[in-house]
Length: 489
Image (cartoon, helix red, strand yellow):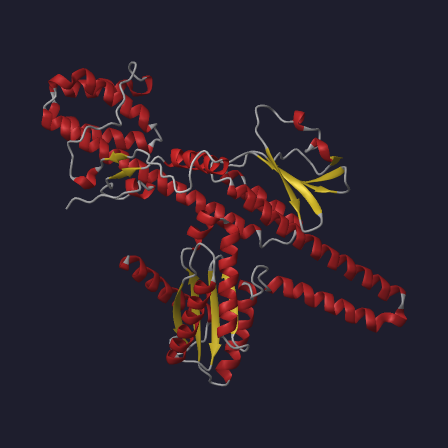
């Protein structure tokens, strides 16, 4: 069966066999669109003008055309020093033992790529030798070599794609965990542990003391200590204190009406949106740190008043208790959605389950997971991803009772513990949630659709009434649902 695509997505090369497709001139489409728009605005062209740009056929293995010339080979300017031994062996086999060429290429290519050898250098060496000896190579063997090299390039591309996916997941987890920190030392320790793995060689965070003076909060240079300096210098001692060459980006840290500071970082290979998202996350973290610091200062002030004014002891203790309650809420509530966070959910759920066990009440545990959240973040930005998360939280609050325990476990995962509820009750709940999701998508003007998957566990499955086991059972059911959706595609 011959299969072809039409838009040359990266996934077309990563699948097996690689998909034949059509290459569209995306950059040129963008440039011509802007030119056309400007011409229409200035009156040089009429509205409705149509431009046709050339596309190109990209032949890969899905068309069955194994004999298609392999255009990945470039004629080298001479032997590659890094491939000299390989080239000599390859030339010897081409001249004297062509039956062993395919096995030799397979083994050597795998060894080269495992050692992170540059694929283009390898192909250049092979191309030079094939060009020099093409007259002495049997057509069938040449065809098999081209076929092998096509497979090699496709697998190499797939490995690179998987590596890129892992790096993007690592960045997403870094940003997600960054938002949960609320202590200065915890933040510094976390940055020390994670930044170098993400490709940040230079990273400096400074907080304003006033309009002209800043204080270094964090530095990726171990010898650089906390210091006060002129803000216009950007770092203590100025940029001249860094060893060249270096390339830094400076982004501000601020809340609605207050400048918090700024941070400097070297660019990274990932999307520029990542730095902006890190900036936003740092702003939220510093707001939390400042709020908790003010609450603690206020608590300390109240304690001092208690010691100095015994007549106001009862009133001061009451206010101190309120401050402690606020701090407790901060530690068990998710900042983005207002739902219980993982610690809050596990703590409250365990107490409720113990009570249900004594009263022999049944209950269910539901694990929810947003579909395609990473795609929303990658395509439209993390701000849209936050909207999707908050919208799902609102829908869950709407469709469950106040007595039920609802939490966000992190990222795109939610859990609910519903009491006096059975399998049939679960089906009714899912119907209501589906209606709410459909209503949201119908009224929404966002360029994406809200969707979810869910898994169920019941108290009948877990006689020991253990919340960790219930969550594990529900997560297993959720995994089956997501696998079913994936296979159905």
